[in-house]
Image (cartoon, rainbow over all chains, first blue to last red; front, side, top):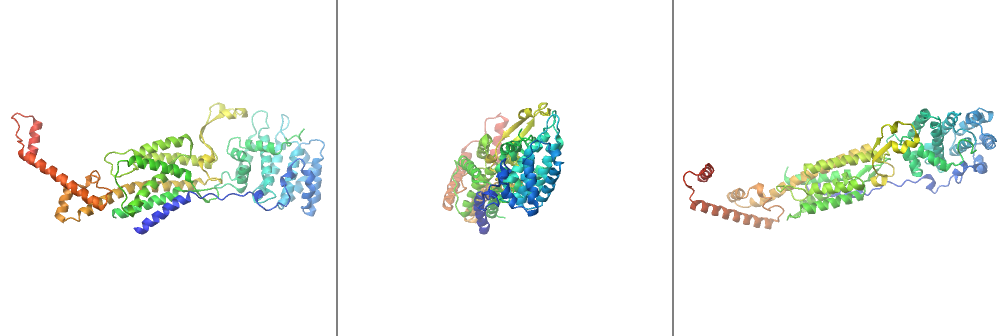
Length: 255
Length: 304
């Protein structure tokens, strides 16, 4: 009986002590002392990212340097604002897709290079739906971003170079897919939104027992965007965050 | 199983329940504490209930087991209240008031001292636990309100500018108020932990009350049994066990208990002698033609 009483006393102490246990603080990759391969990798996605293109190109495999340079400079140099699908059908657009596919098989640096291409595509081609243009262009950009996110999002969560750019890529994806959703003049286009809902749910682990690392990263950095994922208009929060992150990307080349 | 062992097991059950109520599982599956703030509020409620319910009590813990039992009663109450309280806001205030009323309310013939876990208090606590679990579930799903009701007709119109008035949110709260871990909460295992903890503490508290009552009666019985057997039987006849609590025999030291029994026996014997004397010298025969009521009473007295 004394043993039972002693155990009870110890358990009472444990019950009080256990209440104070806190979850270990999560350290985002950019908070670590480790330096990224490229300083301030988010700059490569900005409107003046082309100024640092040389730094990124040096880190790419020899065979991909020239195609990457051609496609990115080609996009920046576009005088008109071609529709996305139309531009992708040109020889330069086809080279873009081939280079993108090659880069997506690579490491974090190549992943960043691929994302730079996709952001440039969204910046310099026309994908915004209008009364006479359907959602096909926005959906195409969304498909390409979705493939990139499927390849790199989860592993970016522990990567100093790719962590912030991947989150920015997810915001851009939300922006493009929401534009596709809102494209019809009357009503809404449900198909792309349903596809985006399934993908973001898997990407962030919304339906799973635990959130994914990427989901937590998004929640830490853009809480309103993350919390919005559980609402009916689930990309609205991320769309809003994307407008702040990429004010120059409006689906019409800023014109 | 004797009362001492029952009391120890009841305390052990309360402690196990306290451990279960102190934990939750975060999104990574790691054990995270439920925090000291709810326990603080629970302790305040337990203290207020103890003071209000035990204001007229004269009992004190007399040995290590009594100390453990008293501490278990207080901590158990603090744990169970902390486990069921809504995380914050005006609900918390009303829940505290309701719990204080339920925990201090007691019948005059109540067996145990201090705050009691009566069936009505237990039901109220279970309902509060359900509310708490529902709030935790909503939070684990990233929904920050008790319920969301769609406004008929307006919610069917597919115009986004109507979104703010399409639904009505009831009982909003936020993650900080909830005390949810930063990495989210695994609702299933946490639900199991809290429900088992609640059941363990509630049953432990009820068991403790009964066991403590029985233990005090055992002690009084042991004191009386130190008398010669025939005398002990007479004393137990004079002071029946059902009255020991009411007569203030619980919670006394050995010496005080003996003194109290002496004075009770003396008082009881004096009363009996006075009654017998009165019975001997009082003419029971009433005037002829008395009511049936008087006749019945008279017959009963004669039989005695």
